[in-house]
Length: 178
Image 1 (tube, rainbow, N blue to C red):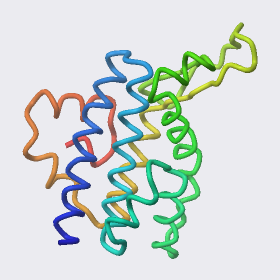
Image 2 (image 1 turned 60 degrees about the vertical axis):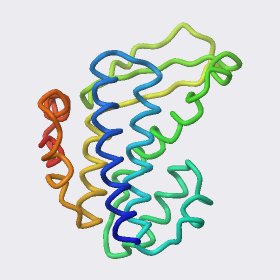
Image 3 (image 1 turned 60 degrees about the horizontal axis):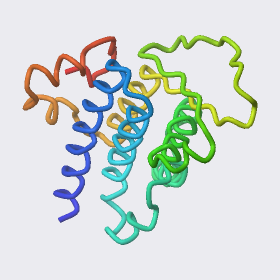
Image 4 (image 1 turned 90 degrees about the vertical axis):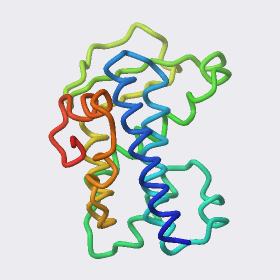
């Protein structure tokens, strides 16, 4: 059962990942961040499903911070600190999943398909939450998760159609490009 659940999580992660990458290239803000958050969440839960019961995974909810800590704890020999910032940035995107949060607090999203994001100063008041989504950082993070979990992404990417593969490969230098 755990192996099947693991496979289902990673398969779902790839589907969210394709949809999230499409959303970034299509300028779908804030949806892109929410979908990519789900992609990372599913991949982390895929690895953790090998050791944790479904109820324990559910208890972690949607918190990438909690999932990331559990993931790193399960791999003590791996130094994954370089991805901590990407996790923190992506975890913020969970708050803009529902329009009520945006209506109550506002948002400023910087979203780019590369690691270089414009750093121009915003004229918006400082209390407005800022979200920084860098697709190449998410690409590298997901690639690291698949690698650490010893999951071959080609198993999940191989069955995708040409449209999905196009959005996976665009500006993607990782093994997840297909």
